[in-house]
Amino acid sequence: MRALIPAFLLAIPFMASAQVHDLVGYWHNWNDANAPYLQLDQTDPRYTIIDIAFAEPLAGTTHNMVFTPSGTPQNEFIAAVGALQAQGKKVIISIGGANATVHLDSDAERDEFVSSMLDIITTYGFDGIDIDLEGSSVSSTGGTIISPVDAPIIRLIDAIEAIGDAFEVQNGVPMMLTMAPETAYVQGGMSAFGGIWGAYLPIIDALRDRIDILHVQLYNSGSMYGIDGSIYTQGTADFIVSQTEAVLQGFGTGGGFFGPLPAEKVAIGLPACQNAAGGGYVDPTDLAAAVEYLLGTGPQPGSYQRLSTYPSLRGLMTWSINWDAVSSCATSFELAQSYEDIFGISTSLDTNAGITSPAIWPTVLSPGATLHVEGQDEFNAILIDPTGRTVMNGTTFNGNIALSEGIAPGHYIFFAGSPSGKMLSSRIAIVAP
Image 1 (tube, one colour):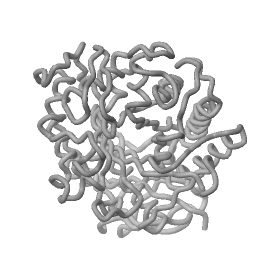
Image 2: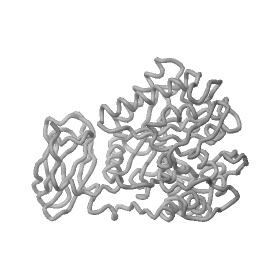
Image 3: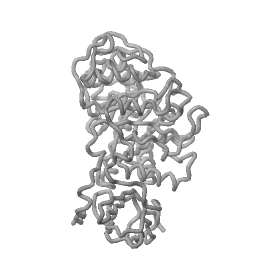
Image 4: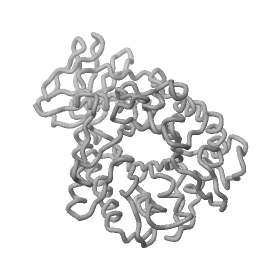
């Protein structure tokens, strides 16, 4: 039987659960002279979903996935992931990127891909995966959207299903799944169906019930057809509106009709500043005009005329958080500010209604170790596993509480509430002694 959650926890106003619009940002795991490596805890608090870029195939393979933080010790990185999650954010691992070929050429490779991705997710406590496959990773030779014939595409679909099923069994909650295809792989299906053109459509269609967010890269694209038959050029409000409405309304291809996705599953993907991509940057004024037109709160900004309004549009995605942070390319965190201005949302920590995080340390420790809680008060404290089951409760003394020796390794949420109403929360990782 699941233990009852103490009453003081029932009143916690988890901000993320009620949020309609998200800001998704890729955090890149390398140092670029123009967009330097950023410690994960330096992420602007307005980002609600952080995509860690990237899990890539082990050298010499196209399927055995690996990830190691390049500028942070592993235990510190795990703790930083947990701290972000304790603030109500999602942290997921992105697969592929522009420089990594992911290809599942046999059932054995598919199974190793599944196993290696689950190992990465479990090690770091990620909330799910993002599929960012580019180049030769996804290509179609025939078939239709609903009946693909290419074995690597079919194996990839099967692999994501298997990872999602295993994640839910292990964690008791669904895995977050996002996708970031380039325009050629999606809207490009309107002009051709084969090779890279429309190649993502069978994957999106097969996994549409699992997908949380599709955020097509509306950059490095060139021009694309809209569903009105006209051609639109990247870097304009018309391009944003036309390409976004294509996936919201659906469109015909040589491989059949691609059915629409609901607005709450669609976000707009753009570069954070001019130098973050080869093309497609849109300044804050044009971005606001495009998004507000889609939301139904602003006038038509160009020649493309939308068919409907989409007030539940999921939000914005950007490449990348690192680029958004620098001030040499645009105003520092210009994209994050645009998100706040357009959607009227600020996710800074001081709006998180009484929850302070992280005020509990260490966040990576062994069974039986002592947790230190901020302050010298006596706190009511509980530890909750990913299924929502309470595995430990008690009272801190002088800000300390010893964990039970019987707690299994894994990721947990620790809550502590004082009689005065102060609430502390943090994600902690229990590792084997």
